[in-house]
Length: 559
Image (cartoon, rainbow, N blue to C red; front, side):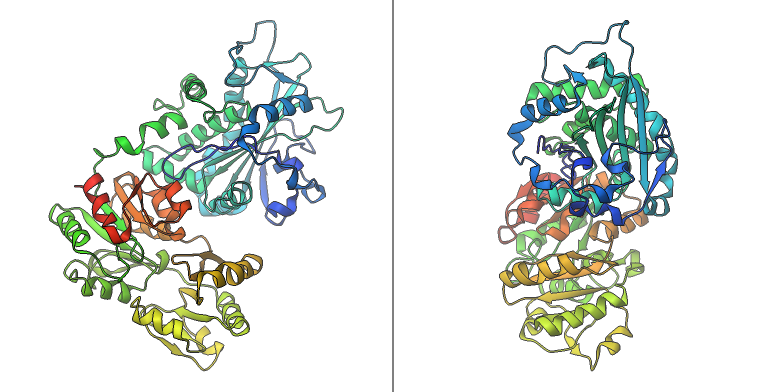
C-alpha cells in the first residue's frame, strides 16, 4: 500500500494508492457481478488496459497478497511503478526538480474512460450532468497537471479511468485495503504492470462516490458538479505521485497544485480538497452556528445505568432554552427511547410529538411527531434470519415499531426489554406469522461479544441476503437493516424538513452505526468509549458516556 491518506475531517475522506485494479483479483472486489454503464471513451478503444474498465475483469487473477501494507514504501513503490511503465519521470510531489514542459515537448494524447454504476443514475439523477462532462473535465485537468510533469519522448498517450460508484463499493474497498469499514469520497489506484509493447502511460483509476460527493456538496454550499471536479483533481494528482501525507511541505505543494488547476479552469474559488479540509478543522469550528444536535443514545447520551446524567440533561435543556433543536438519533425503537428519557426526567423534552430518528434511521418522525419516512426489510431477509437463528440457537428478534417479535423466548431478549427498555418480544407461532408484518430490522443478541465476532458476524459476511446490510451498536449485538440505510439517511430526511444544512449539525455517537451520521454532520463528535473506527472519523473526541461527554461536546461546540 503505497499511500494511505486522510483527507477531510468529515468522513476521514481518503485518497490512497494501491496497485491498479488491473493487477488485483476480481474475487477480492466482486466487481464483475455489478453492472457498469460506460460513458464513451475518447479513443473508442475496444479494450482498456485500466482495471476498472477492462471488459475481461473475470480473467484477472493476480493475487491481492502482492500488495505492500506499509505506507513507508511510498517512494520505492513510485520508482517501481515508473520502471514498469517507463514513461513518466520527475513527477513526485516532493521533488524539487518539477518543471513545466518546454514548448518543444508537446503534451501526449490524453485518453479517458468514464464509467458510472447504473444504480447511481437511478438513485441520483442530479449527477447526470456532472458525469456526462467528466471525460472532458478529466482531459482538461490532466493536461494542466502534466505541465508540471515531464513525460518521456516515448509517451504518446496517457490513459486514466474514472468510476462513479456508491458508498457501498467505496466502503468495501476501504475495508479490503485499509481495514476501515466506512465510505470515503475519492480513491486513487495507480497502474499495475503495463503489458509488453503497450505504448501508453497507464496512470491508473480514480473512483468517486457520488453519494458522498452529494453530501459534501450540500455541506459546502455548492453543486455536485463542482464537488465532482474537486474530487477529480485530487484523485488525478495522487495518480501523478503527489502525496499530501508525506510531510507539511508535500501538503503545501499538492494544495497549491490543486488550487492552480481549479483556478485555471474556473471551477471553484474556494480551493481544493486539501484547502477545504484544513479550513474545516475542529479548531476552527467553534464559531460555526449549530442549529441542530443529533444524539445517539446507548453508549453516548445514556450512561451505563441506561439513564441520562444530570450534567447531560442540563446541557440539553440549555440548548432548548436557546432555540437549538436536540433530536435523538438511535437504534432504539421510539417507545424505548422516549421511556429512557422519561426515566431520566426529560419527558418534557422528548415525547410523542417530538421529532427523532429511530431504529437505525429506518423510522423518522418530524414536527408534531408525524412520520416522515419508514423503511422495511425484504421478507426474504426476515425469513432467512429466523432460519439461521434456529440453527445457531442465538437470541433473535424482529423490530416492528412499538413491539418486537421472535420465534423463541430467550433470557437475552428479556434483558433487551428490561435493561435497554426495548419493546418486549412476543413469541410468534411460525415464521409465516412474522412475515405477515412489516419488519424494520433484525437483532441478534449473543451471550458475549466473542459469539458475535467469531460466529454471527462471519456468517452474515459470507451469507448476507440481497437487500440487507449489517450494522452494530453494542458489542454483544448485530443487526440486519435495509441496504443503503443508516442514521445519516434518516438525518437527511429530517433536516430537509427543518431547512437545516449539514454544516449546521453537531452529531455525537459511540458505535459503528454512527459513522455515517458523524460524517454527514458539520461537527462529528465521538465519546471516549467509542470504537476506534468512529474516533478516526470524528472531528473531536470528548469524555465517555459515564463522564458527561455529551455535555462536554455541547459546551465546546454549541453553547
